[in-house]
Length: 330
Image 1 (cartoon, rainbow, N blue to C red):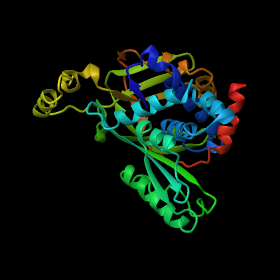
Image 2 (cartoon, one colour):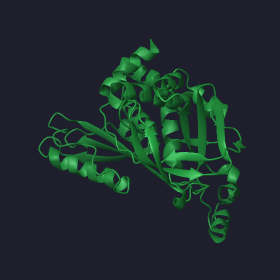
Image 3 (cartoon, one colour):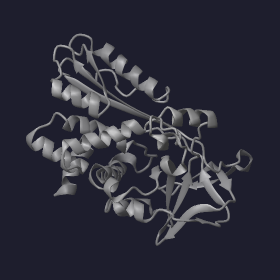
Image 4 (cartoon, one colour):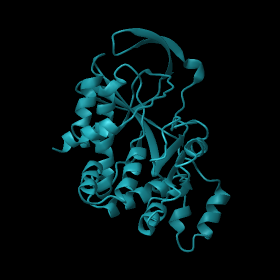
């Protein structure tokens, strides 16, 4: 999923481009580490936000390694980027987007004032004390409940039993919730069951959404890209007027201009060869600009477009994946 339009040169630099690079490298590493024969889904912005909070309290070599991994020049740059992500949540001009970040610390160990201020003010994180020493299971239940609420009950648990214990001093968790409607919805009655080809060579029967409309599509050597846009949310006219009149001079904030509203799309990269996905992922991970350079620029007459319906669920430990990222920087 990407946010339109292509960001400015300033936005593409620093932590923004670092997020894209990290996302593509993680996709490659997670796929190679056990995701070859299953669907893979993860939130790069969540991982980036959590590591940014770690960087806010890091020093010396650890800080330098985190900054290099996240593609940022300083902690201030990370904080500015994190603040922008948090403030964009729930934007009136986009689908429903909610981003929540929480930090739990052992109640007998107080957070340093500077770190607490950075977490709350810059990273927009909630901070709470927890009894990891004597009531670790209650702490796990509280954190899982927080995540469940933040994701509208789509994710009910992220910490398994036993994952928090008496030696735990800090837990950082975040959650992203996104709900959108296609700008050009597929018609349910056009759904058709067809063969779907798996990476291991097998085929399965799966329902496919179908459409015969002009699409934002681009054909490149070895692969194609389809961009499906989500419908922007529009305020009712009276609400738009209220925001404008109460904006104290910030009329643009409530003007409802489409140019000022964030837009979101889902981009589907399809290799021409049935076994071409690993090679395409390698190519994407080799250069962060690859993603932006190959997105469709225009809507074209495409005939019939078919997209399989899917439901994704994935879990993974990324400790080893993050350790391997040092190889990418050497």
